[in-house]
Image (tube, rainbow, N blue to C red; front, side, top):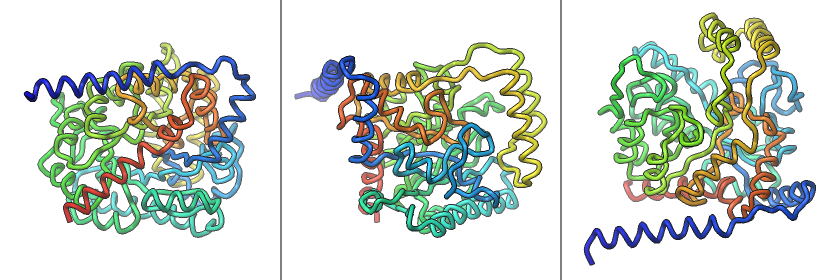
Length: 421
């Protein structure tokens, strides 16, 4: 049999599998809203639910914010995640990202970025130590499942922005040994590793650099998961081709549903799935749904950004309070046109219809901008499962979406590392 014939058979087989899944999934119209909610809670008790990206670690450095206390979701200073609300919303596990904003590509810039990442990592570890009867640190899926069986919440560690390693490849092993299990290669600006989807100061998309190829190779060798959320299209394809292990997008959506450069096109999602990767659907409203035009709000936000820049890195509590009050006033005067849980699940539906249920998951970006109507903080996470049930997803499907798909990628990356070593 020729290669072309074999490829055709495989393609038809995959397409048939996807169509079969779609045809077998029927909306649960006969079940009441309360019945769906009760069933969702039963499922959450049985499976492990995982969010692959939040920025809550930054709150831990503030000193006066206690993750063990329940904070009122209606207050902006409360944040989106704390331990009581994780339990309230039925979320078992979350990747706390050590986010490092892009700064100068100089020795001092690299030193500051590494310092910032280490401070955030230690803040998460301190949270775990201070609340060790409630939450534990996991470095692999097996430990996450063990902690779930023990009745504990689960924390994983990631780094958002490869700027944190500067130009020092040895820091990949160093951070891995510190418990970090993924690196988001870039953020909103180009860096030494690759180009960003949202930085076109240089109109050319230069993709993955030579240093970036070495980063991919070292991540594969160590077992560090590679996150391509924020990466440019060319960067995405070049990372995908260079990596021996599956890669993933920790918090991105489908561009066909919402045309935003931070989202993945259908061709990208197909390529990602073909190599066993997974896209974790993000809750940041402007990635979920294109907001209705609001020139007054857009003008106010532009002035806010010009005034404060990347304000999330500001540590001075009084300055942060003032900034939050200004943002709250903007939202009061010009309410955002937020996406809904239904809009969010439209992205999951799209990926499932495109490549199947094995290649999609959830990465909220809570405390980094994530939040939609009906799931605006972690206490409302079960609402996503309710909507999935309403659309006819099975318990097996839901278990995959809530973490099993990502854990497959996790385990395969570890297997590649063992082979390379």
